[in-house]
Amino acid sequence: MEITPGVHRIDGMRGNCYLIARDGLVLIDTGLPRTSWKILTYVRNTLHRNPSEIHTILVTHYHMDHVGNLPALRKATAARVAVHEGDAPYLSGEKPMPLPEWPRSLLIRLVRPFLGWTPIRADILLRDGDTLAGLTCIHTPGHTPGSICLFDPVERVLFVGDALMTEGGRIQGPSERFSLFQEQARRSLEKVAGLDFDVILGGHGEPVRPEASALLREFLAGERGR
Ligand SMILES: [Zn+2]
Ligand SMILES: [Zn+2]
Image 1 (cartoon, protein in one colour):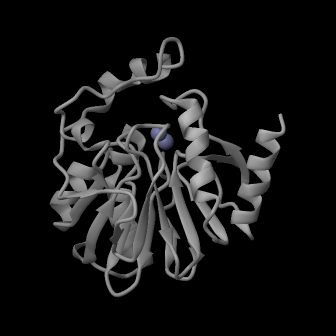
Image 2 (spheres, rainbow, N blue to C red):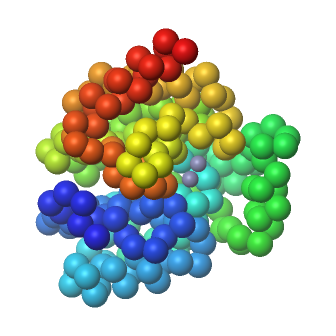
Image 3 (spheres, rainbow, N blue to C red):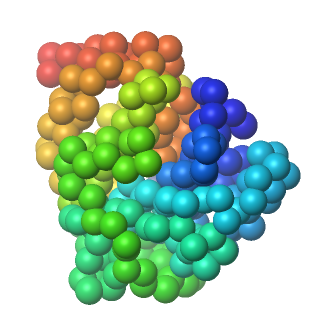
């Protein structure tokens, strides 16, 4: 479905994936493994474009529900793959993927062996403040060491991955179950709250809008007052 002009969320994915359709196509996050066909079908049948037009894939962090289709999509599209340098070693298999402490990690430990995963080396290592494909990378560590938000200043959209969870279009704060460093994740939100955006698009759940930056600032003020 089209969320704002040219920004689409692909239907039926575990882990939201967003396509920005302009001259070329840019994909943000890729969902759980073995569902790349849903992304490719959306490009062909809904956008009436060719998957080879996806020139850049950015992932917000290394979790499997966000990077799962990277290997398949890189083959299907020849896109360059970008990730923050803090998460790149987990994506490439140079370092084992860290898990939240027991028992929060129980679910991940149970499902991980069944997901199947081919390590992948990113083409572009992002740092805080970098701009790629019209998106500004904001390093928001905490959920994972290299978690990022991506800011689209033209559409005034902030893609947050799992730096911020939303439920029914409402801001919930960082995921308590899956974030590695809660306090750091919360501090990272203070950083993005300084930007002005109308829509928050999360890794899970529905868009937060309108005036999403005001809603985030309100949420954080409430948290500080607790
Ligand atoms: Zn995550
Ligand atoms: Zn997620």
